[in-house]
Amino acid sequence: MEETIDLREYFGIIKKRSKIIVAITLIAMAVSGIVSFFMLSPVYEANTTLIVNKNESSESQTMTGDEFNVTQKLAVTYGKIITSRTVLNEVIKNLKLDMEYGELSKSVNVSAVSDTQIISITVQDTNPKKAMDIANAIPKIFTEEAKRITKANGVEVIDKAVLPQSPVKPNKVMNVAIATVLGLMIGLFVVFLLEYMDTKIKKPEDIEKHLGLPILGVVPKENI
Image (cartoon, rainbow, N blue to C red; front, side):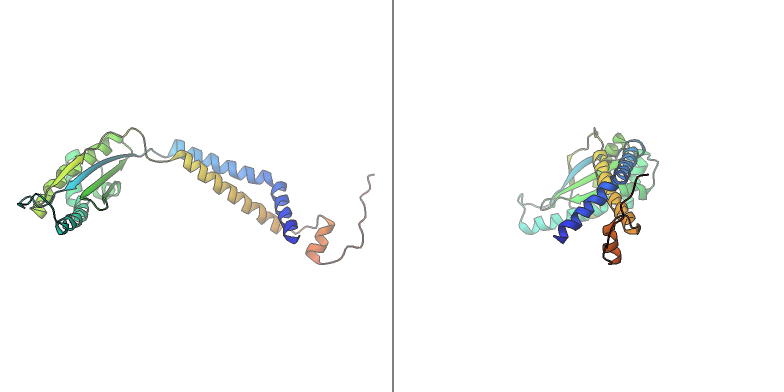
């Protein structure tokens, strides 16, 4: 019974101060909407994939399990070479990009596809054409470096990057949804904090609850 009474009190507090909760939630939604729709620049993503070939001088046309494992490890090594200063600085030079190595390296993500010889290169930029150009320029320069370093192994492009049509971020709807939930949580926190700090005696029941004193009687309020 005690739990039911407490639960009703909680709902009563929320109902009494519902305007505060609604106001904070609406403010959070509005701020998130303004930032997402008008302040954050859309980011586009271009992708290209490469495949690591086995040793070109090998006479056998089939690949053994050991050779496959070596090739997979080589794909991981190639991923490090792709984001190296040598490769990316050459990309900046060839495309005449107005950016430094550190800035470009942050926008390039390289990953080896699990259990395959495939390397995936992802480039993000606020300019869709620029993202595509960078994604297509990296394999050309990297292939030359890979052959120079590993000598016997080669790399081939599977899919060239195409012009992205829509941005990958920000996710405007998701941002507003998250802001709504956070605003609601903050509103509830503020409401219960205000209620906790409010020590005024407003009802006869508050005397028993807060002071532990029995109520002997209640003087009715007369309308004059």
